[in-house]
Length: 158
Image (cartoon, rainbow, N blue to C red):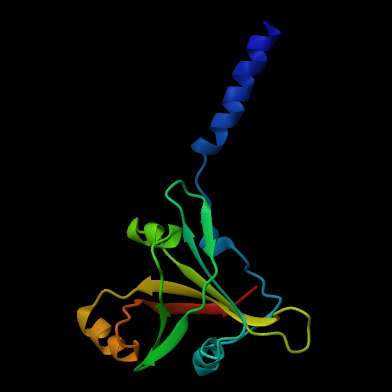
């Protein structure tokens, strides 16, 4: 009887997380910043120097995180900044196709520390407006069709 009670208790404990509300990891993560931020033209120029640390995060279909390392570029159109992502088919592109939001991180190459201490996390929104995509295509090398994401918010990297 004790074994049956233990099994039932274990099943109830495993079901508890499914009953609670899911945490909003994007809005609750890192509300205190320990590193210096970078934004605007300074961020664009740092990203386009192709030195530093680059990452893009998405969410897998099962809800687990996916972090991808690849180098991206930033362009400015009027008063907005856009990330130019060149992706070969992989888990990140599958997540994009499944509607995952993306967040990018850039850490500037170390100057005073043995690790990046200046950088940014960028909230992104996929560009789907044809007029904007057409204007952004002027920044693409010939024969290259990147994905464009508008940078909607920038916060220090951590």
